[in-house]
Image (cartoon, rainbow, N blue to C red):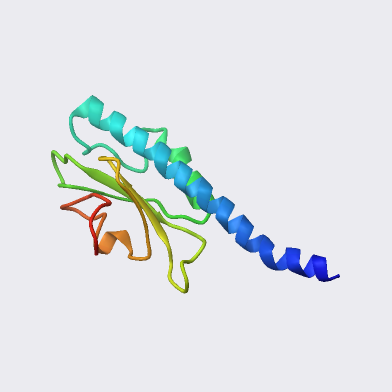
Length: 130
C-alpha cells in the first residue's frame, strides 16, 4: 500500500517531464523548419505556425503536450532573426517554466515569460539576461 502511494504521487511529475521533453523536441524541430524558411526566402517573414505546412503537426504536438507555440521575428518585414518558445508543464519552484530557442542557435530555459524579454519583435533571440 505504501509503494502504491509513492508511485501515485511521483507519476504526474514523470508524465509532465515526458511532456516537456516532447515540447522541447517539437521546438527543436520547428527551429529546423525556421532555418529552412530563411534558406528559401532570405528572411523569416513567411515562417509561422502553419508555414511551412510541416509546422502544423509540430504545433499540434506541442499543444497536445500542454505547451503553446509562440514566436517572434526581428521585424515585420525582412526579419533576420526569429525565435519560438513555449511554456512547460514542470514548474521551477512556484514559477511557470518556459523554453525558448532562436534562429541563432541560442536556447534558454527560464521562468521569465520570453515575450517580455527574449522572444519579442526587435531582438527575437533567446540570449541575454532579463
